[in-house]
Image (tube, rainbow, N blue to C red):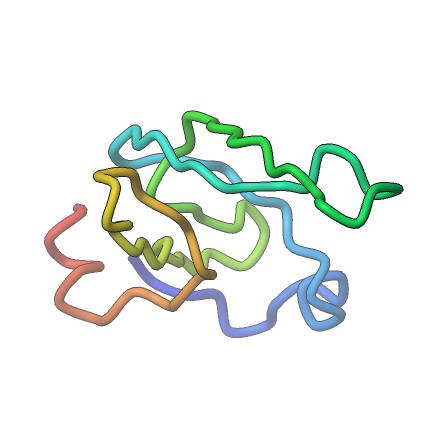
Length: 91
């Protein structure tokens, strides 16, 4: 994948137009269910997501950082850019 030399001005403002691809993974997280009580209960939510994304304007690709929880589920902690070897492997 070749990156464009003049990225779009929207991409310079970090307003990328992402297209998700890669493997499909189920991630889970916990959110407080009731905030008014002093003993807040947490509900566990899950969602199916893709592991990679690519900007349709400037061509950069990123992969999702996944952490495996002790209970066997996975959580996402952010994004990191793909290395050059991973660019070549995808093509």
